[in-house]
Image (cartoon, rainbow, N blue to C red; front, side, top):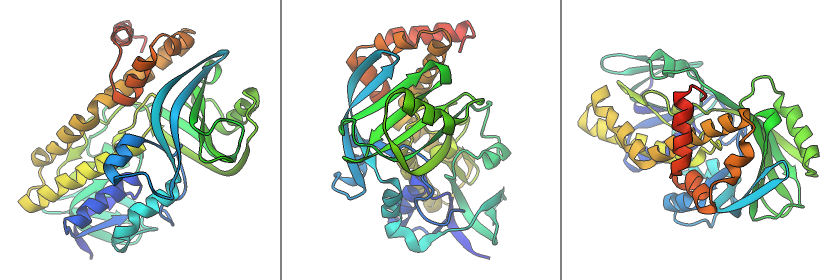
Length: 370
């Protein structure tokens, strides 16, 4: 039976970033994932904020950085406005292969985690192939809450943002602008994120359970006059309910989508996955060196990620709630129009909520409208 200091369950951006930190600290670890190939299947819009990417990797001079977007354009019916925000469009499969490069010998694919049992002196990870022992587990396998619920880490019923999209051949829209088309009828939005002069990542997402996202995407492309041909498809699901109740337990740390560390208002998740993966791994290193895997010791992880991006998590929840309230009351255009360019940018990029937006949100909570 294999035994490690740390086992990482899930090898997306969070798990791979955690693996790189563990490797640098000479920790005996194993990363597992049920998928057949790193980076596939693609499940997202592939965007990340430029400043944070540079913080992680020093510059943007990588082949998998396909485009730099300086402006976000918001559409609603006949209304349109834009605000400045520097984001990168990645080739996410190649990006994840890059992340995996230094740690590939410590990764095991086609290995699905079926269950985790936490005992006094170790963790048992039961997979489709074998049982693996570890001193600590980093869970980063997306929003399948089987393990989180088992250890009472999820408190409330989740609201999911379901999306369908793909890589499209499309060359008419400006290359340096991200477009978001909000639509009252479908309780969601269509995005167009240019990759290069000929292709874009295009998708539609909604919280409405009764909508066929694939058919709706096709209808919206036609509605907004976007002439695009799909090259390859993807589908994904994220929670818009905010971070889970607790992101730690005895011998267990939870990061990335597994912890719902996503900006709920837009679905942005890559940055938070990378940052939380780093912080989870740094906490794991301290736990190993102190031989302390208790819940009380590991709670420092939650303190560090909340200090790093907790404000953005809260702003994302407020933005999502206000979108829902505005859509239900036919005030979505007002919500998108009222903030100044600076306020809208700060709301989404910096997590600074305008005072009047916070007041409306509080009133909506009091009146049980949100």
